[in-house]
Image 1: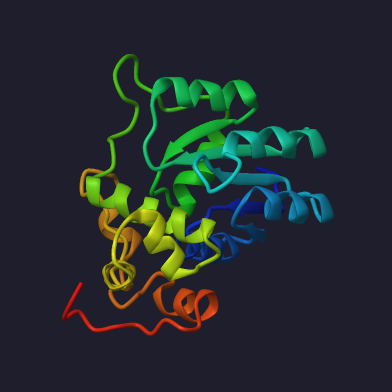
Image 2: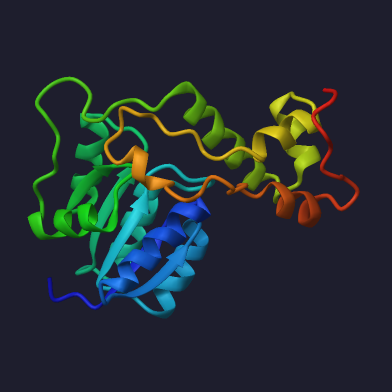
Length: 218
């Protein structure tokens, strides 16, 4: 592809870092960010040849970020990722300047192949382009977006979600649910059984007075 560097932007840290590791193993210089502002700062300081952006993130969307990155470096080639998508969403991404639009989870080979294919999004005629995520996956993503909006303060996130703090802590201790209908779902979190997405770090960093409780009451 003639590319030496890539920017990966996703608010889910475990996905972002695993993809970064895979891209580095393929010889690319990798930079990462978790949201619009962080990505713009990283990219302005050191623009990359390629970029992979999550469509839905806390704050400004991946489409907004795509447009901003192309203002900074018009020849950057960008792929948009989404947990689920439709023909209008893919068309919006390509019209905004993306070279392709992929369903999550997508591994490094899927993404690099999409860059090679260029502006030929894999969107069938009619109907949904990608399977909708499970209800459990939607809940998991929503909880983590609310938590991020609360600066990882568990008590405040629980208040906004309308659930007890201990219930939220239990949910945060669980790994991300994956929809078995999604291609690659079985492999994406292989070896991550013990992963706890931000439960302990959020509890200590955001609300020092909270202690991770047992599961005895709600």
